[in-house]
Length: 615
Image (cartoon, rainbow, N blue to C red):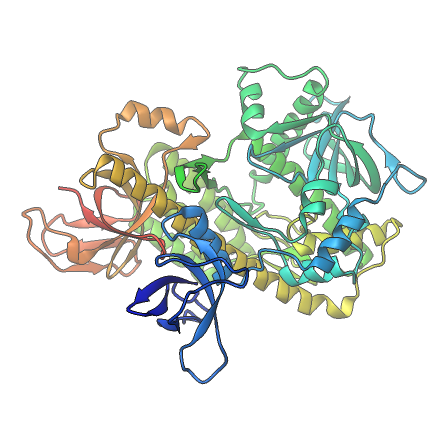
Protein backbone atom coordinates (compact mmCIF):
# COMPACT_ATOMS: atom_id res chain seq x y z
CA UNK A 1 0.00 0.00 0.00
CA UNK A 2 1.56 3.28 -1.07
CA UNK A 3 1.02 6.96 -1.87
CA UNK A 4 1.65 7.90 -5.48
CA UNK A 5 4.29 10.56 -6.15
CA UNK A 6 5.45 12.36 -9.28
CA UNK A 7 9.21 12.86 -9.38
CA UNK A 8 10.07 14.72 -12.54
CA UNK A 9 8.88 12.58 -15.41
CA UNK A 10 8.80 9.46 -13.24
CA UNK A 11 6.05 8.07 -11.04
CA UNK A 12 6.94 6.44 -7.73
CA UNK A 13 5.04 4.76 -4.92
CA UNK A 14 6.00 5.59 -1.33
CA UNK A 15 5.01 2.82 1.15
CA UNK A 16 2.49 4.08 3.69
CA UNK A 17 2.15 1.41 6.36
CA UNK A 18 5.00 -0.30 8.20
CA UNK A 19 5.00 -4.07 7.66
CA UNK A 20 2.90 -5.77 10.37
CA UNK A 21 4.72 -7.32 13.30
CA UNK A 22 5.32 -11.06 13.33
CA UNK A 23 4.59 -13.22 16.36
CA UNK A 24 8.22 -12.95 17.51
CA UNK A 25 8.03 -9.13 17.54
CA UNK A 26 9.97 -8.60 14.32
CA UNK A 27 8.67 -7.06 11.12
CA UNK A 28 7.29 -9.28 8.39
CA UNK A 29 8.46 -8.86 4.84
CA UNK A 30 6.46 -6.29 2.93
CA UNK A 31 6.69 -3.19 0.79
CA UNK A 32 9.22 -1.13 2.75
CA UNK A 33 10.89 1.23 0.25
CA UNK A 34 9.95 3.59 -2.54
CA UNK A 35 9.44 1.84 -5.88
CA UNK A 36 9.40 3.15 -9.44
CA UNK A 37 6.26 2.71 -11.51
CA UNK A 38 7.14 4.33 -14.84
CA UNK A 39 7.25 7.58 -16.72
CA UNK A 40 3.89 7.57 -18.53
CA UNK A 41 0.27 7.89 -17.51
CA UNK A 42 -0.38 5.64 -14.52
CA UNK A 43 -3.65 3.66 -14.34
CA UNK A 44 -5.06 0.65 -12.53
CA UNK A 45 -6.29 -2.48 -14.40
CA UNK A 46 -9.73 -0.87 -14.76
CA UNK A 47 -8.24 2.04 -16.67
CA UNK A 48 -8.78 4.62 -13.91
CA UNK A 49 -6.08 7.26 -13.99
CA UNK A 50 -4.17 7.86 -10.76
CA UNK A 51 -3.13 11.26 -9.50
CA UNK A 52 -0.20 12.35 -7.40
CA UNK A 53 -1.11 11.87 -3.76
CA UNK A 54 -3.53 8.99 -4.43
CA UNK A 55 -3.57 5.94 -2.20
CA UNK A 56 -2.76 2.95 -4.42
CA UNK A 57 -2.26 -0.77 -4.10
CA UNK A 58 0.89 -1.85 -5.94
CA UNK A 59 2.28 -5.24 -6.85
CA UNK A 60 5.96 -5.94 -7.42
CA UNK A 61 6.62 -6.89 -11.03
CA UNK A 62 8.73 -10.02 -10.95
CA UNK A 63 11.78 -10.65 -8.82
CA UNK A 64 15.31 -9.38 -8.81
CA UNK A 65 14.96 -6.15 -6.84
CA UNK A 66 14.73 -3.71 -9.74
CA UNK A 67 11.99 -1.89 -7.80
CA UNK A 68 9.47 -1.79 -10.66
CA UNK A 69 5.85 -2.52 -9.93
CA UNK A 70 2.37 -1.85 -11.24
CA UNK A 71 -0.77 -0.39 -9.71
CA UNK A 72 -3.50 -2.95 -9.13
CA UNK A 73 -6.05 -0.59 -7.56
CA UNK A 74 -6.61 3.11 -6.87
CA UNK A 75 -8.28 3.45 -3.47
CA UNK A 76 -8.71 7.18 -2.97
CA UNK A 77 -6.85 9.66 -0.80
CA UNK A 78 -4.77 8.94 2.32
CA UNK A 79 -6.37 11.87 4.17
CA UNK A 80 -9.81 10.21 3.97
CA UNK A 81 -10.32 7.82 6.88
CA UNK A 82 -12.48 5.32 5.01
CA UNK A 83 -9.97 5.10 2.14
CA UNK A 84 -7.01 4.68 4.47
CA UNK A 85 -8.72 1.94 6.51
CA UNK A 86 -9.60 0.16 3.27
CA UNK A 87 -5.94 0.39 2.35
CA UNK A 88 -4.94 -1.06 5.71
CA UNK A 89 -7.23 -4.07 5.18
CA UNK A 90 -5.69 -4.74 1.76
CA UNK A 91 -2.18 -4.17 3.07
CA UNK A 92 -2.77 -6.82 5.74
CA UNK A 93 -3.89 -9.40 3.21
CA UNK A 94 -7.68 -9.13 3.41
CA UNK A 95 -9.41 -10.16 0.17
CA UNK A 96 -12.17 -7.49 0.26
CA UNK A 97 -14.31 -9.58 -2.11
CA UNK A 98 -15.23 -13.18 -2.84
CA UNK A 99 -14.50 -15.07 -6.02
CA UNK A 100 -17.45 -15.18 -8.39
CA UNK A 101 -17.90 -18.94 -7.97
CA UNK A 102 -18.18 -18.54 -4.20
CA UNK A 103 -20.68 -15.69 -4.59
CA UNK A 104 -22.80 -17.75 -6.99
CA UNK A 105 -22.84 -20.71 -4.64
CA UNK A 106 -23.77 -18.44 -1.71
CA UNK A 107 -26.63 -16.83 -3.65
CA UNK A 108 -27.94 -20.23 -4.70
CA UNK A 109 -27.82 -21.44 -1.09
CA UNK A 110 -29.56 -18.29 0.14
CA UNK A 111 -32.49 -18.96 -2.18
CA UNK A 112 -33.09 -22.29 -0.49
CA UNK A 113 -36.49 -22.39 1.23
CA UNK A 114 -36.42 -23.91 4.70
CA UNK A 115 -39.67 -24.87 6.39
CA UNK A 116 -40.65 -26.65 9.57
CA UNK A 117 -40.62 -30.40 8.98
CA UNK A 118 -40.27 -33.48 11.12
CA UNK A 119 -36.62 -32.57 11.63
CA UNK A 120 -37.12 -28.88 12.44
CA UNK A 121 -39.29 -27.62 15.27
CA UNK A 122 -41.70 -24.78 14.49
CA UNK A 123 -41.15 -21.97 17.02
CA UNK A 124 -42.56 -19.15 14.92
CA UNK A 125 -45.38 -18.67 17.44
CA UNK A 126 -42.91 -18.07 20.28
CA UNK A 127 -42.24 -14.48 21.27
CA UNK A 128 -38.68 -13.82 20.09
CA UNK A 129 -36.35 -10.82 19.88
CA UNK A 130 -32.77 -9.90 19.06
CA UNK A 131 -30.55 -7.44 20.97
CA UNK A 132 -27.57 -6.02 19.11
CA UNK A 133 -25.61 -2.80 18.65
CA UNK A 134 -27.49 -0.08 16.79
CA UNK A 135 -24.98 -0.35 13.93
CA UNK A 136 -25.20 -4.15 13.56
CA UNK A 137 -26.00 -5.52 10.11
CA UNK A 138 -26.11 -9.26 10.76
CA UNK A 139 -28.15 -10.80 13.57
CA UNK A 140 -27.10 -14.34 14.38
CA UNK A 141 -28.67 -14.81 17.82
CA UNK A 142 -32.19 -14.31 19.21
CA UNK A 143 -33.80 -14.89 22.58
CA UNK A 144 -37.10 -16.21 23.95
CA UNK A 145 -37.95 -16.71 27.62
CA UNK A 146 -40.82 -17.53 29.97
CA UNK A 147 -41.31 -17.86 33.70
CA UNK A 148 -42.32 -21.31 34.96
CA UNK A 149 -42.99 -20.41 38.60
CA UNK A 150 -41.70 -22.65 41.39
CA UNK A 151 -39.61 -21.77 44.46
CA UNK A 152 -39.42 -17.94 44.79
CA UNK A 153 -35.80 -18.20 45.94
CA UNK A 154 -34.87 -20.24 42.87
CA UNK A 155 -37.56 -19.43 40.30
CA UNK A 156 -37.88 -21.70 37.31
CA UNK A 157 -37.41 -20.13 33.89
CA UNK A 158 -37.21 -21.53 30.40
CA UNK A 159 -34.86 -19.75 27.99
CA UNK A 160 -34.47 -20.40 24.29
CA UNK A 161 -31.26 -19.23 22.65
CA UNK A 162 -31.77 -19.31 18.88
CA UNK A 163 -28.66 -19.22 16.67
CA UNK A 164 -28.73 -18.86 12.89
CA UNK A 165 -28.46 -22.30 11.28
CA UNK A 166 -25.52 -21.49 9.01
CA UNK A 167 -24.75 -25.19 8.53
CA UNK A 168 -28.08 -25.56 6.67
CA UNK A 169 -26.68 -23.27 3.97
CA UNK A 170 -22.93 -23.89 4.16
CA UNK A 171 -22.13 -27.56 3.65
CA UNK A 172 -18.78 -28.99 4.60
CA UNK A 173 -16.41 -29.08 1.64
CA UNK A 174 -18.42 -26.61 -0.45
CA UNK A 175 -16.74 -23.60 -2.04
CA UNK A 176 -18.31 -21.29 0.54
CA UNK A 177 -17.15 -23.55 3.37
CA UNK A 178 -13.58 -23.75 2.08
CA UNK A 179 -13.41 -19.96 1.73
CA UNK A 180 -14.89 -19.47 5.21
CA UNK A 181 -12.29 -21.84 6.63
CA UNK A 182 -9.51 -19.98 4.79
CA UNK A 183 -10.65 -16.64 6.24
CA UNK A 184 -11.26 -18.14 9.67
CA UNK A 185 -13.24 -15.20 10.99
CA UNK A 186 -14.77 -11.88 10.04
CA UNK A 187 -12.66 -8.78 10.61
CA UNK A 188 -14.52 -5.72 11.94
CA UNK A 189 -12.87 -2.32 11.51
CA UNK A 190 -14.31 1.21 11.72
CA UNK A 191 -16.71 1.69 8.84
CA UNK A 192 -16.02 -1.67 7.17
CA UNK A 193 -16.00 -5.43 7.59
CA UNK A 194 -14.09 -8.27 5.95
CA UNK A 195 -16.80 -10.95 6.25
CA UNK A 196 -16.22 -14.66 6.64
CA UNK A 197 -19.33 -15.42 4.58
CA UNK A 198 -20.70 -13.68 1.48
CA UNK A 199 -23.34 -11.02 2.12
CA UNK A 200 -26.11 -13.15 0.57
CA UNK A 201 -25.76 -15.37 3.64
CA UNK A 202 -24.32 -13.19 6.43
CA UNK A 203 -26.64 -10.22 5.94
CA UNK A 204 -29.60 -12.00 4.38
CA UNK A 205 -30.49 -15.69 4.61
CA UNK A 206 -28.65 -16.31 7.90
CA UNK A 207 -29.57 -13.02 9.55
CA UNK A 208 -32.43 -13.27 12.05
CA UNK A 209 -34.23 -10.16 10.86
CA UNK A 210 -37.67 -9.44 12.34
CA UNK A 211 -40.86 -10.60 10.69
CA UNK A 212 -39.24 -13.27 8.51
CA UNK A 213 -39.07 -17.04 9.07
CA UNK A 214 -35.48 -18.11 9.63
CA UNK A 215 -33.72 -21.46 10.12
CA UNK A 216 -32.06 -21.71 13.54
CA UNK A 217 -30.39 -24.10 15.92
CA UNK A 218 -32.04 -23.69 19.32
CA UNK A 219 -30.59 -24.34 22.76
CA UNK A 220 -33.52 -24.71 25.16
CA UNK A 221 -32.56 -24.37 28.81
CA UNK A 222 -34.64 -24.79 31.94
CA UNK A 223 -33.08 -23.01 34.87
CA UNK A 224 -33.90 -23.00 38.57
CA UNK A 225 -32.31 -19.78 39.66
CA UNK A 226 -28.90 -19.90 37.99
CA UNK A 227 -28.73 -23.69 37.75
CA UNK A 228 -29.43 -25.39 34.40
CA UNK A 229 -31.54 -28.46 35.21
CA UNK A 230 -32.54 -29.42 31.65
CA UNK A 231 -31.09 -28.74 28.22
CA UNK A 232 -32.39 -29.61 24.76
CA UNK A 233 -30.84 -28.94 21.36
CA UNK A 234 -32.60 -29.04 18.00
CA UNK A 235 -33.06 -27.42 14.63
CA UNK A 236 -35.91 -24.93 14.56
CA UNK A 237 -37.81 -22.40 12.51
CA UNK A 238 -38.19 -19.03 14.25
CA UNK A 239 -39.54 -15.57 13.52
CA UNK A 240 -38.10 -12.60 15.38
CA UNK A 241 -40.76 -10.18 16.57
CA UNK A 242 -38.48 -7.22 17.24
CA UNK A 243 -34.96 -6.03 16.52
CA UNK A 244 -33.87 -4.32 19.74
CA UNK A 245 -30.67 -2.36 20.33
CA UNK A 246 -28.65 -2.28 23.52
CA UNK A 247 -29.59 1.36 23.92
CA UNK A 248 -33.33 0.61 23.66
CA UNK A 249 -33.17 -2.18 26.22
CA UNK A 250 -31.22 -0.03 28.69
CA UNK A 251 -33.85 2.68 28.31
CA UNK A 252 -36.55 0.10 29.07
CA UNK A 253 -34.64 -1.23 32.10
CA UNK A 254 -34.23 2.33 33.39
CA UNK A 255 -38.00 2.91 33.07
CA UNK A 256 -37.59 5.66 30.50
CA UNK A 257 -39.29 3.73 27.68
CA UNK A 258 -42.12 1.19 27.66
CA UNK A 259 -41.67 -2.36 26.37
CA UNK A 260 -44.03 -3.83 23.83
CA UNK A 261 -46.67 -6.11 25.32
CA UNK A 262 -45.56 -8.77 22.83
CA UNK A 263 -42.11 -9.24 24.36
CA UNK A 264 -42.16 -7.33 27.67
CA UNK A 265 -42.63 -10.47 29.82
CA UNK A 266 -40.01 -12.56 27.96
CA UNK A 267 -37.52 -9.69 28.22
CA UNK A 268 -38.09 -9.38 31.96
CA UNK A 269 -37.74 -13.16 32.40
CA UNK A 270 -34.46 -13.10 30.46
CA UNK A 271 -33.28 -10.17 32.58
CA UNK A 272 -33.91 -12.06 35.81
CA UNK A 273 -32.11 -15.18 34.58
CA UNK A 274 -29.11 -13.14 33.41
CA UNK A 275 -28.91 -11.43 36.80
CA UNK A 276 -28.97 -14.79 38.57
CA UNK A 277 -26.26 -16.18 36.27
CA UNK A 278 -24.07 -13.13 36.85
CA UNK A 279 -24.43 -13.35 40.63
CA UNK A 280 -23.61 -17.05 40.58
CA UNK A 281 -20.56 -16.62 38.35
CA UNK A 282 -18.96 -14.05 40.60
CA UNK A 283 -19.60 -15.54 44.01
CA UNK A 284 -17.51 -17.98 45.95
CA UNK A 285 -14.28 -19.31 44.49
CA UNK A 286 -15.16 -19.99 40.87
CA UNK A 287 -12.17 -18.02 39.57
CA UNK A 288 -14.42 -16.13 37.15
CA UNK A 289 -12.99 -12.71 36.39
CA UNK A 290 -14.76 -9.42 37.00
CA UNK A 291 -13.64 -7.14 34.18
CA UNK A 292 -15.58 -4.25 32.69
CA UNK A 293 -15.03 -3.89 28.96
CA UNK A 294 -15.55 -1.05 26.52
CA UNK A 295 -15.48 -0.62 22.77
CA UNK A 296 -14.78 2.41 20.59
CA UNK A 297 -17.52 3.46 18.20
CA UNK A 298 -16.68 5.60 15.18
CA UNK A 299 -19.14 7.82 13.33
CA UNK A 300 -18.33 8.64 9.69
CA UNK A 301 -19.69 11.47 7.58
CA UNK A 302 -20.78 11.05 3.97
CA UNK A 303 -17.32 11.95 2.67
CA UNK A 304 -15.72 9.09 4.62
CA UNK A 305 -14.15 11.19 7.38
CA UNK A 306 -14.37 10.24 11.04
CA UNK A 307 -16.92 12.64 12.46
CA UNK A 308 -16.84 11.40 16.05
CA UNK A 309 -15.37 8.69 18.24
CA UNK A 310 -17.16 7.45 21.35
CA UNK A 311 -16.50 4.69 23.81
CA UNK A 312 -19.38 2.42 24.73
CA UNK A 313 -19.09 0.72 28.08
CA UNK A 314 -20.78 -2.53 28.99
CA UNK A 315 -24.26 -2.02 30.40
CA UNK A 316 -26.95 -4.33 31.76
CA UNK A 317 -28.30 -5.05 28.27
CA UNK A 318 -24.85 -6.18 27.12
CA UNK A 319 -24.47 -8.38 30.19
CA UNK A 320 -27.92 -9.92 29.63
CA UNK A 321 -26.92 -11.20 26.20
CA UNK A 322 -23.42 -12.14 27.37
CA UNK A 323 -24.62 -14.35 30.21
CA UNK A 324 -27.29 -16.10 28.14
CA UNK A 325 -24.79 -16.78 25.36
CA UNK A 326 -22.27 -18.12 27.89
CA UNK A 327 -24.94 -20.43 29.30
CA UNK A 328 -25.73 -21.75 25.81
CA UNK A 329 -22.05 -22.22 24.96
CA UNK A 330 -21.46 -24.09 28.23
CA UNK A 331 -24.41 -26.39 27.62
CA UNK A 332 -23.24 -27.22 24.08
CA UNK A 333 -19.65 -27.82 25.20
CA UNK A 334 -20.78 -30.08 28.05
CA UNK A 335 -22.88 -32.23 25.71
CA UNK A 336 -20.10 -32.54 23.12
CA UNK A 337 -17.55 -33.41 25.78
CA UNK A 338 -19.75 -36.04 27.40
CA UNK A 339 -20.47 -37.67 24.02
CA UNK A 340 -16.90 -37.43 22.77
CA UNK A 341 -17.90 -35.66 19.55
CA UNK A 342 -14.92 -34.01 17.83
CA UNK A 343 -15.17 -30.22 17.89
CA UNK A 344 -13.23 -27.07 18.69
CA UNK A 345 -13.43 -25.99 22.32
CA UNK A 346 -12.66 -22.47 23.47
CA UNK A 347 -9.99 -22.94 26.11
CA UNK A 348 -8.41 -20.47 28.47
CA UNK A 349 -5.60 -22.01 30.47
CA UNK A 350 -5.14 -21.17 34.12
CA UNK A 351 -2.69 -18.35 34.78
CA UNK A 352 0.88 -19.21 35.70
CA UNK A 353 1.39 -18.91 39.48
CA UNK A 354 4.56 -16.83 39.07
CA UNK A 355 2.74 -14.29 36.94
CA UNK A 356 -0.04 -14.02 39.52
CA UNK A 357 2.55 -13.42 42.24
CA UNK A 358 4.07 -10.64 40.14
CA UNK A 359 0.61 -9.11 39.62
CA UNK A 360 0.10 -9.01 43.38
CA UNK A 361 3.47 -7.29 43.78
CA UNK A 362 2.54 -4.75 41.09
CA UNK A 363 -0.82 -3.99 42.69
CA UNK A 364 0.76 -3.74 46.15
CA UNK A 365 3.25 -1.18 44.82
CA UNK A 366 0.23 0.90 43.75
CA UNK A 367 -1.47 0.53 47.16
CA UNK A 368 -4.28 -1.60 45.70
CA UNK A 369 -5.68 -4.13 48.24
CA UNK A 370 -4.79 -7.73 47.39
CA UNK A 371 -5.66 -11.11 48.92
CA UNK A 372 -3.03 -13.24 50.69
CA UNK A 373 -0.88 -15.36 48.38
CA UNK A 374 -0.13 -19.03 49.16
CA UNK A 375 3.58 -19.77 49.43
CA UNK A 376 3.37 -22.73 47.06
CA UNK A 377 0.60 -21.83 44.64
CA UNK A 378 -0.98 -24.39 42.31
CA UNK A 379 -2.48 -23.43 38.93
CA UNK A 380 -6.00 -23.95 40.31
CA UNK A 381 -5.20 -21.68 43.27
CA UNK A 382 -3.77 -19.12 40.84
CA UNK A 383 -7.04 -19.15 38.87
CA UNK A 384 -9.13 -18.69 42.03
CA UNK A 385 -6.80 -15.93 43.21
CA UNK A 386 -7.16 -14.09 39.89
CA UNK A 387 -10.93 -14.05 40.32
CA UNK A 388 -10.60 -12.59 43.81
CA UNK A 389 -8.00 -10.05 42.64
CA UNK A 390 -10.28 -8.90 39.81
CA UNK A 391 -13.13 -8.32 42.28
CA UNK A 392 -10.88 -6.31 44.61
CA UNK A 393 -9.58 -4.25 41.72
CA UNK A 394 -13.15 -3.54 40.60
CA UNK A 395 -14.07 -2.38 44.10
CA UNK A 396 -10.93 -0.20 44.23
CA UNK A 397 -11.49 1.59 40.92
CA UNK A 398 -15.12 2.32 41.76
CA UNK A 399 -13.88 4.49 44.60
CA UNK A 400 -10.73 5.79 42.96
CA UNK A 401 -9.24 6.16 39.47
CA UNK A 402 -7.08 3.80 37.42
CA UNK A 403 -9.62 1.47 35.80
CA UNK A 404 -7.90 1.32 32.41
CA UNK A 405 -4.41 0.82 33.88
CA UNK A 406 -5.38 -1.85 36.40
CA UNK A 407 -7.56 -3.73 33.91
CA UNK A 408 -4.58 -3.79 31.56
CA UNK A 409 -2.39 -5.25 34.31
CA UNK A 410 -4.94 -8.00 34.92
CA UNK A 411 -5.23 -8.87 31.23
CA UNK A 412 -1.46 -9.05 30.75
CA UNK A 413 -1.26 -11.61 33.56
CA UNK A 414 -3.69 -14.00 31.88
CA UNK A 415 -2.98 -16.67 29.30
CA UNK A 416 -4.41 -16.04 25.85
CA UNK A 417 -7.62 -17.89 25.01
CA UNK A 418 -7.46 -20.17 21.97
CA UNK A 419 -9.25 -22.98 20.15
CA UNK A 420 -8.39 -26.59 20.91
CA UNK A 421 -9.74 -30.08 20.13
CA UNK A 422 -9.24 -30.91 23.81
CA UNK A 423 -11.53 -29.53 26.49
CA UNK A 424 -9.41 -28.02 29.27
CA UNK A 425 -11.92 -25.47 30.55
CA UNK A 426 -12.06 -21.71 30.52
CA UNK A 427 -10.29 -20.13 33.49
CA UNK A 428 -11.50 -16.60 32.76
CA UNK A 429 -15.13 -17.69 32.97
CA UNK A 430 -14.53 -20.22 35.73
CA UNK A 431 -16.16 -23.04 33.79
CA UNK A 432 -15.01 -26.57 32.99
CA UNK A 433 -16.86 -26.68 29.63
CA UNK A 434 -16.81 -24.01 26.99
CA UNK A 435 -16.98 -23.63 23.22
CA UNK A 436 -17.92 -20.93 20.74
CA UNK A 437 -21.31 -21.81 19.28
CA UNK A 438 -23.33 -18.60 19.21
CA UNK A 439 -21.77 -16.66 16.28
CA UNK A 440 -21.51 -19.00 13.27
CA UNK A 441 -21.68 -16.07 10.80
CA UNK A 442 -18.32 -14.84 12.06
CA UNK A 443 -15.72 -17.26 13.55
CA UNK A 444 -15.34 -20.60 11.74
CA UNK A 445 -15.07 -22.63 15.00
CA UNK A 446 -18.69 -21.73 15.77
CA UNK A 447 -19.75 -23.36 12.51
CA UNK A 448 -17.70 -26.45 13.40
CA UNK A 449 -19.48 -26.64 16.77
CA UNK A 450 -22.86 -26.38 15.02
CA UNK A 451 -22.05 -29.40 12.87
CA UNK A 452 -20.71 -31.30 15.88
CA UNK A 453 -23.81 -30.55 17.98
CA UNK A 454 -26.26 -31.46 15.23
CA UNK A 455 -24.43 -34.72 14.58
CA UNK A 456 -24.58 -35.54 18.31
CA UNK A 457 -28.35 -34.93 18.62
CA UNK A 458 -29.43 -36.48 15.31
CA UNK A 459 -29.82 -33.18 13.51
CA UNK A 460 -28.69 -34.48 10.14
CA UNK A 461 -25.07 -33.26 10.07
CA UNK A 462 -21.94 -35.40 9.88
CA UNK A 463 -19.56 -35.16 12.84
CA UNK A 464 -16.31 -33.29 12.13
CA UNK A 465 -13.29 -35.50 11.56
CA UNK A 466 -11.15 -35.81 14.68
CA UNK A 467 -7.96 -36.16 12.64
CA UNK A 468 -8.08 -32.58 11.39
CA UNK A 469 -9.17 -30.82 14.58
CA UNK A 470 -5.69 -30.05 15.91
CA UNK A 471 -4.54 -28.35 12.72
CA UNK A 472 -7.85 -26.49 12.38
CA UNK A 473 -7.61 -25.27 16.00
CA UNK A 474 -4.15 -23.85 15.37
CA UNK A 475 -5.21 -22.21 12.09
CA UNK A 476 -8.36 -20.58 13.46
CA UNK A 477 -6.50 -19.36 16.56
CA UNK A 478 -3.88 -17.78 14.28
CA UNK A 479 -6.57 -16.16 12.14
CA UNK A 480 -8.28 -14.78 15.24
CA UNK A 481 -5.03 -13.21 16.46
CA UNK A 482 -4.38 -11.71 13.03
CA UNK A 483 -7.90 -10.25 12.93
CA UNK A 484 -7.47 -8.74 16.39
CA UNK A 485 -4.23 -7.07 15.30
CA UNK A 486 -5.88 -5.58 12.21
CA UNK A 487 -8.87 -4.39 14.23
CA UNK A 488 -6.65 -2.80 16.88
CA UNK A 489 -4.50 -1.03 14.27
CA UNK A 490 -7.57 0.20 12.37
CA UNK A 491 -9.07 1.55 15.60
CA UNK A 492 -5.83 3.45 16.25
CA UNK A 493 -5.91 4.93 12.74
CA UNK A 494 -9.54 6.03 13.17
CA UNK A 495 -8.76 7.52 16.59
CA UNK A 496 -5.94 9.55 15.03
CA UNK A 497 -8.28 10.92 12.35
CA UNK A 498 -10.82 11.90 15.02
CA UNK A 499 -8.14 13.51 17.18
CA UNK A 500 -6.65 15.38 14.25
CA UNK A 501 -10.07 16.80 13.43
CA UNK A 502 -10.54 18.03 17.01
CA UNK A 503 -7.09 19.63 17.02
CA UNK A 504 -7.54 21.43 13.73
CA UNK A 505 -11.00 22.69 14.67
CA UNK A 506 -10.23 23.75 18.25
CA UNK A 507 -6.47 24.33 18.23
CA UNK A 508 -3.36 22.30 18.97
CA UNK A 509 -2.70 24.12 22.24
CA UNK A 510 -5.67 22.59 24.03
CA UNK A 511 -4.95 20.22 26.88
CA UNK A 512 -6.48 16.86 27.71
CA UNK A 513 -6.97 14.78 30.84
CA UNK A 514 -5.30 11.38 30.54
CA UNK A 515 -4.65 8.22 32.53
CA UNK A 516 -1.29 6.43 32.64
CA UNK A 517 -2.01 2.90 31.41
CA UNK A 518 1.50 1.62 30.70
CA UNK A 519 5.09 2.41 31.66
CA UNK A 520 8.45 1.58 30.12
CA UNK A 521 11.87 3.07 30.71
CA UNK A 522 11.40 5.36 27.70
CA UNK A 523 8.11 6.84 28.84
CA UNK A 524 4.41 6.47 29.60
CA UNK A 525 1.47 5.26 27.53
CA UNK A 526 -1.53 7.50 28.06
CA UNK A 527 -5.24 7.09 27.38
CA UNK A 528 -6.80 10.53 27.12
CA UNK A 529 -10.01 12.13 25.96
CA UNK A 530 -11.69 14.66 28.22
CA UNK A 531 -10.49 18.22 27.73
CA UNK A 532 -9.41 20.04 30.85
CA UNK A 533 -11.94 22.82 30.35
CA UNK A 534 -14.82 20.36 30.68
CA UNK A 535 -16.41 20.52 34.10
CA UNK A 536 -16.19 17.71 36.64
CA UNK A 537 -19.99 17.58 36.60
CA UNK A 538 -19.97 16.85 32.86
CA UNK A 539 -17.42 14.10 33.39
CA UNK A 540 -19.45 12.47 36.17
CA UNK A 541 -22.58 12.59 34.03
CA UNK A 542 -20.75 10.97 31.10
CA UNK A 543 -19.59 8.08 33.30
CA UNK A 544 -23.20 7.22 34.21
CA UNK A 545 -24.17 6.66 30.59
CA UNK A 546 -23.19 3.85 28.21
CA UNK A 547 -21.16 6.39 26.22
CA UNK A 548 -18.07 8.00 27.77
CA UNK A 549 -15.39 10.38 26.53
CA UNK A 550 -13.22 9.13 23.63
CA UNK A 551 -10.09 7.22 24.59
CA UNK A 552 -7.34 8.54 22.37
CA UNK A 553 -4.01 6.80 22.85
CA UNK A 554 -0.55 8.38 22.97
CA UNK A 555 3.02 8.10 24.20
CA UNK A 556 4.67 10.60 26.57
CA UNK A 557 8.48 10.17 26.33
CA UNK A 558 10.55 10.72 29.49
CA UNK A 559 12.75 13.11 27.52
CA UNK A 560 9.75 15.48 27.39
CA UNK A 561 9.06 15.24 31.13
CA UNK A 562 10.37 17.88 33.51
CA UNK A 563 10.83 18.28 37.24
CA UNK A 564 8.76 20.71 39.29
CA UNK A 565 11.23 23.52 38.55
CA UNK A 566 11.09 22.83 34.80
CA UNK A 567 14.47 21.11 34.49
CA UNK A 568 15.16 17.88 32.64
CA UNK A 569 15.83 14.96 34.92
CA UNK A 570 16.62 11.28 34.89
CA UNK A 571 13.69 8.91 35.31
CA UNK A 572 13.96 5.29 36.44
CA UNK A 573 11.33 2.54 36.24
CA UNK A 574 10.79 0.50 39.40
CA UNK A 575 11.22 -3.27 39.47
CA UNK A 576 7.49 -3.93 39.20
CA UNK A 577 7.13 -1.71 36.12
CA UNK A 578 4.43 0.35 37.83
CA UNK A 579 6.16 3.62 38.80
CA UNK A 580 8.60 6.00 37.13
CA UNK A 581 10.74 7.80 39.71
CA UNK A 582 12.40 11.09 38.85
CA UNK A 583 15.60 12.44 40.37
CA UNK A 584 13.95 15.29 42.25
CA UNK A 585 11.96 14.56 45.42
CA UNK A 586 8.32 13.80 44.74
CA UNK A 587 8.76 13.29 40.99
CA UNK A 588 6.80 10.12 40.31
CA UNK A 589 4.44 8.84 37.65
CA UNK A 590 2.34 5.79 38.53
CA UNK A 591 0.07 3.49 36.61
CA UNK A 592 -3.44 4.88 36.98
CA UNK A 593 -2.28 8.44 37.63
CA UNK A 594 -4.26 11.27 36.08
CA UNK A 595 -2.13 13.60 33.98
CA UNK A 596 -2.73 16.63 31.77
CA UNK A 597 -1.15 16.43 28.32
CA UNK A 598 -1.00 18.17 24.96
CA UNK A 599 -0.59 16.59 21.54
CA UNK A 600 2.77 17.20 19.84
CA UNK A 601 2.34 15.07 16.71
CA UNK A 602 -0.19 12.74 15.08
CA UNK A 603 1.00 10.05 12.64
CA UNK A 604 -2.30 8.83 11.22
CA UNK A 605 -1.03 5.97 9.04
CA UNK A 606 0.80 4.40 11.98
CA UNK A 607 -1.94 5.20 14.47
CA UNK A 608 0.63 6.96 16.64
CA UNK A 609 0.27 10.06 18.84
CA UNK A 610 3.21 11.80 20.54
CA UNK A 611 2.38 13.73 23.71
CA UNK A 612 3.99 16.40 25.86
CA UNK A 613 3.08 17.45 29.40
CA UNK A 614 0.62 20.32 29.61
CA UNK A 615 2.02 23.58 30.96
